Length: 499
Image (tube, rainbow, N blue to C red; front, top):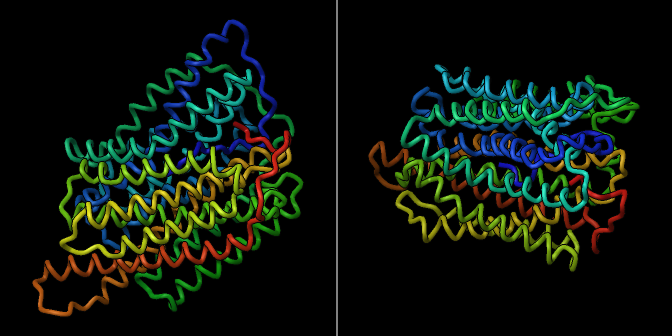
């Protein structure tokens, strides 16, 4: 799930006006771009609702289920910065169409999956092409709307589409899974893509490559390889144990590759990630906060989906509706925090308090039971968690981009979404390992039937995972309290957000 647009265009050139005869088409351009953004955002949640049905159809294990979510989030986050650079190199219209076609093709392959490996590969391909599509989308929006008032209105609409994408994904995933088949949660992207491509061919103008843009292949390989090794190491711990040679080997490899990435970026004249962007305490601390919240949020979606459907017996549609209070609360508190509170008290207090409130929500969630009641246990926990996350997003997203130099505006805007997607990749991998391990070691205190014992073990694993998320959020509150600077955000013309 992504709460803001994937703003990943690197060093976006100054906006250029559309030819006069095309001026009247700019709102059609916004409609096309909004549809593309909706497709990318909702795909982060639409498959979650279908996951139990897909697992039953393809017969993969609980230990493997997180890879359906992780494969998409990892490739999306890992290649997002590179996707922005490709738009600079080869033109935004061209990369938009390539990303759109690839996303549709990989979605279709995923819908026809006959095995777990085929589905994971398709999800990874979706994330890769989504990382090409998202920054091209934002770049096209940036160069289409040059009037200050129209630009503000266009980005407000674009942001609302991105924010609503999560809710649309949850509901659409439930409806398609329940009334058609889980595979339609992937096939539906083909329809989105056909309509979007027709609009792009009709209304988009050709745009030349940005001058001076260069690829940082070494940095890309080191970053993606390091993140993939880290995620796989967490996942492998579930089957091989934390002390196994395989687990430790991947974790050590991830540390070495990420260290190499930092070294490469410090020496490149055109780095994928200029280190000065995250050297600032507010920007670096805010991106860390967003990453850790991504760990928590994606973990909640994964475990709660299984709890609602398999333990409480909810239908896919009812499961999608059950998440809406959390999504709505995030949107409300994010708006209040960003518009009212941020200018009064600054980002540090908002982020720290948001972490604490979300942690309380996770503690409430850890009280779920096999025969639990949604309105008494799950709903209050979702509302509290959503309230805290909304406060974090409103402050952290703003602080993560404030004060960046004009040449770094694109990458500074991209990083919050990269951080959230990486958190979304790490969270399910780490928490699923912890939950399945706790479930496998669960010993019922009294005699139960096999089905009762399985249900009790699954819920026990979920509860342990929620407690771990609470500990992560508590530790994050302490860290961000020391890292983030106090006071209001200082902004200037050079630090303005790309939107």
